[in-house]
Image (cartoon, rainbow, N blue to C red):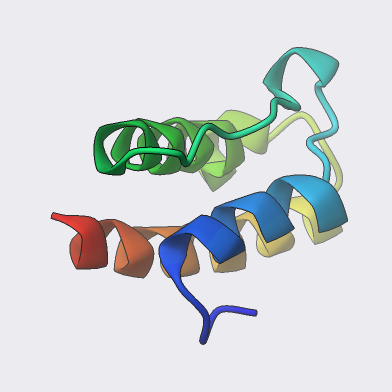
Length: 78
């Protein structure tokens, strides 16, 4: 999924890997470039490994990988 566009990837992350914290499990807004940028930044904060230390080690590793891909997508939309 990471080979597709940023819109597709952000949606994929929240659908396939809903956040363990219900307050962080949101629907990303990707209808405009500005909202896409905001959604990617919010997703990076939600899935950042340092913000997910209270969850399992497996979840933290998944968050690291998600953040790597999100950071690449963020560079694409700048």
